[in-house]
Image 1 (cartoon, rainbow, N blue to C red):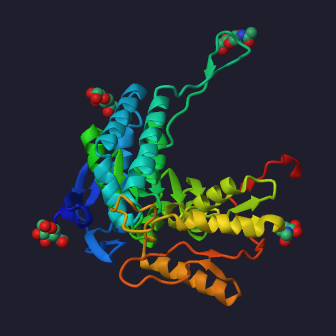
Image 2: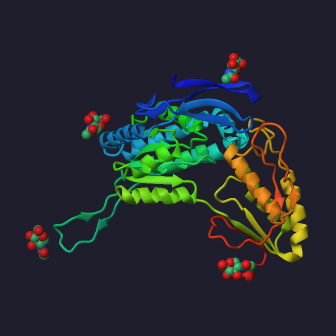
Image 3: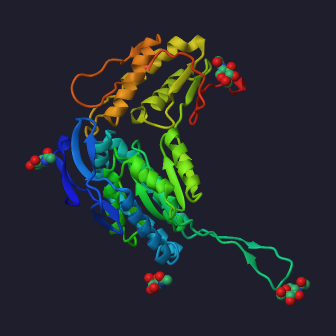
Length: 411
Ligand SMILES: *[C@@H]1O[C@H](CO)[C@@H](O)[C@H](O)[C@H]1NC(C)=O
Ligand SMILES: *[C@@H]1O[C@H](CO)[C@@H](O)[C@H](O)[C@H]1NC(C)=O
Ligand SMILES: *[C@@H]1O[C@H](CO)[C@@H](O)[C@H](O)[C@H]1NC(C)=O
Ligand SMILES: *[C@@H]1O[C@H](CO)[C@@H](O)[C@H](O)[C@H]1NC(C)=O
């Protein structure tokens, strides 16, 4: 299989070359032992965009070895903070240069509007890289007081080592930047597993890693199925840290695998079910704006989505009217159309899950005030659906609560 393919951005009559191999030691390579492929789908059309190599557990071993070697010979031990800073800034510049193409590829594979990917996801990613580039040469220890003048005691901050990073499909470029930037800044090396649903932009970003001049093996990108590549990274004896963003259920498995292997360090960013509380004293127009943004942004595919709204009885009807008008104003369409404010959901699985919840809600007596009917034709579209809110307070999730009131004395 070729290590690159040309993909049509047919909605805007352009083409883009996308790498389809595993990115290890700054080269795109095939799997050493597997013919398995990941089929990247355009959720707006349900067409396969292209297929990329799915890394096997053996490929993960090779990527980890590449990252270990880079850690020992270059990035972790023998590259100054000034040089790390320079390269991370260079990567940010290249992402900024290619923002439009990256945004279009993101729209194609994830469904989100290219305009939003460019102005928000990528803009934020560039800032994030530059922020951490600024830290790379400012990582300092302390000198400690001792009781004998002939002694010297000090601390240093050393990089942890090889980091396995497992990112989700809802913000493929953002998540990539948020994970790699701090690890790179301190001198860690990386084996990155993008989501099997949206692997294309991580591969495209890997081209820029090489162009920026990072030494081979500093960032390795291994698209893989979660139960293969994700599991292998979490359990790997030579991975020093694993960072995972995704579901709570998978987060537990990652922590368990880390504990059962080498007690590697773990950072987890898991799911939410965040409430908005709207009080009668609130500026209701503002509250409706925020509540609409809270649930509609990124087609609701957000760990901090405001997926529960509690409204004080006295303003309930007025608030619902405002909320419906705000939500209705959003144009949901193909992400490559500049007019779209929202896109389809990412995959058939998510589409079926969302419709399952809408149906279950209806069966439990909720009334859809807006939406609630499937569109004819192709594409995993779920038009914004607002259900009259039943108080559901029995959840252990939070993460991004909003509170709308002009009288803080409520609390
Ligand atoms: C992409 O577009 C080119 C030129 O318009 C066409 O020849 C090719 O078949 C298209 N490829 C796919 C996969 O649709
Ligand atoms: C450190 O880097 C320098 C310059 O790139 C190189 O000449 C040297 O061999 C490296 N040292 C080690 C231990 O890898
Ligand atoms: C300080 O440390 C030196 C070297 O170990 C030792 O010779 C000396 O006796 C110590 N002085 C005091 C005051 O403990
Ligand atoms: C919400 O849940 C909390 C904790 O279980 C409980 O104390 C509270 O009474 C509940 N509130 C409502 C309105 O059900």
